[in-house]
Image 1 (spheres, helix red, strand yellow):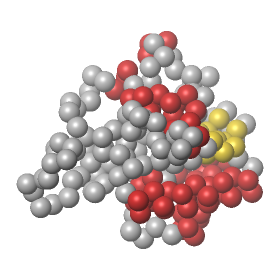
Image 2 (cartoon, one colour; image 1 turned 90 degrees about the horizontal axis):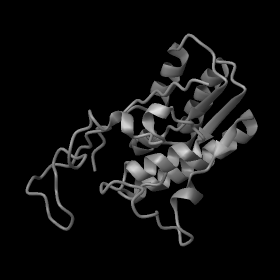
Image 3 (tube, helix red, strand yellow; image 1 turned 180 degrees about the vertical axis):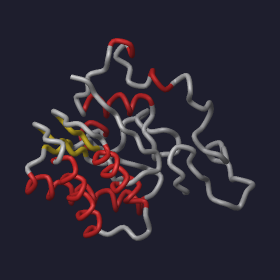
Amino acid sequence: MDTLVICKPGGNIKDAKGAIASIDRNFKRVVCCVGANDCANENFSADSFTAEMKSLIDAAKEKNPDKIVISSIPLRLDSVDAQGKIDIANACTTSIGESAGVDLLSNGPTFTLSDGSVIDGYLHADGLHLSHKGSKKLIANLQIVMKDQYNGDPCNASKSGRRRGAPYQNRVRPNEQSPRKHQHRCWNCGEQN
């Protein structure tokens, strides 16, 4: 079975819904791992998140899949406020999934130790984005089979074009203060912290 991966750096649930709706073919399985950027929004609310997620599921159902899988949003360590919103969003997703008849994938148990701390190496130093190791774990959780050309490593395809160094425009070493007075902006998604 061919796999089509749609990645929307800096995107939100509406963007994912638009991308799914724009594809002119059906799928056997639709897997969605979205919502982190929605949770980072100042105007986040459980009601709006729930409405957007239901809309995304409806768009996925239009592709006549045998199975729809909604993945929980992985943990983040950069913002207590954003992680609180992610906890709310994951609870909303669980509730929606049960009523909409979709499969739910909880990433929490595979990304954390028994004490609740995130497994070392699963997040970049920014505490937000998944590392190479974390990406491999997420793809394993999603049960996505990689083509032989990637040698079982989902991150091989993008290594040649990836920027070197930290994912921040304003690079600061741990335990150092930035000489600049503005916030850091992520290269991948544009989020500031």
